[in-house]
Image 1 (tube, helix red, strand yellow):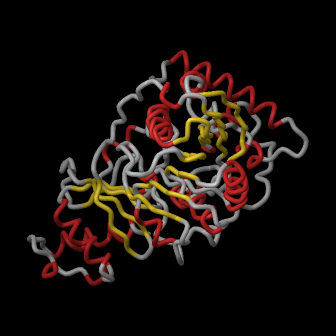
Image 2 (tube, rainbow, N blue to C red; image 1 turned 180 degrees about the vertical axis):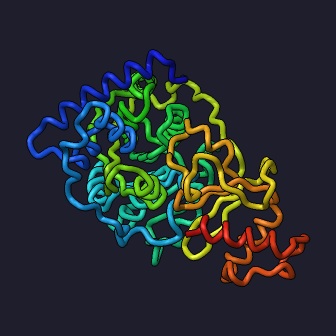
Image 3 (cartoon, one colour; image 1 turned 90 degrees about the horizontal axis):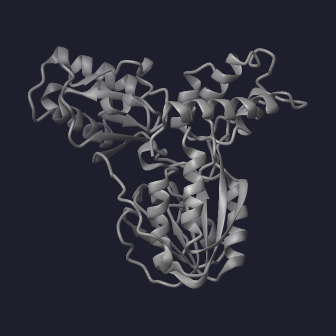
Length: 388
């Protein structure tokens, strides 16, 4: 489903109505309005509040927490891995809910919840495509079984879990695909919990939710707990806010928790095909996660080059709909991006940094491909800015 001009107009009208109600409540602040905006991104909320003449009259509100919680270590979370982690309070709430619902749990793409369940003594199987989550933990509790794979592929795990919990990327095709995996591994009378996008996250979201809920009703009865899930604001999202007019807002993102009491897991319609997009190679340097597109356009005249509209190399968005993403060949966990003209040179530089080297130590002799000193100096300067 695409967003049409009509849906954009309707969306803005619905969003403006909600923002006006929130802004006129006693004690309203910019941060409270953003948290109550049912998914609309903070920069859009601020833009609409300004257009409505409300932004100047609202105080920013309580200061944001800048440091991540202790439960999220390094390597940092990355937007290409859809890594929005739940806050500690949300994890504790979910551990209670899921643990009370069954004696074994299958977690799809929810590492912090899986770890919380394991630490509470609940046997849990976690399926997640990103092996880096292990590096963020001091230890992996014994009741946790980790299956490292992409969730768009059939899962190599036992069937008939009494409880399945999934937190898919906030797009209907991903949710449907992950739900199909859940249905293949849930007990016939089991329960599925789904983290779901709120209705104002994008113009088509309300319609997409309605269609998704109709699909879910093939499987069983459902109930929705609005705003039950709170997500920590990761560094890549915080970088977007720091380069905007919006005050940095910690833990602003909310999701809805859908509970499905399963009647017939085999009744789910076939899911749509999920486009996996480009392949990326992952590097980790000084806690930063750096993704380098496997096949770059090569349009840049330099090994590494800035992208139009990305001041200080920061992509000012986390939306899949942002057209600037098409030009991104290198993307960091701080949402800094660049185009790549010579992939071999950039890949070798990142390998050297991953092995503990520094940008200032890069020398032409360290590369297997030819690079002259002036070009390397420009590359080093740009790498330093991108990895800041």
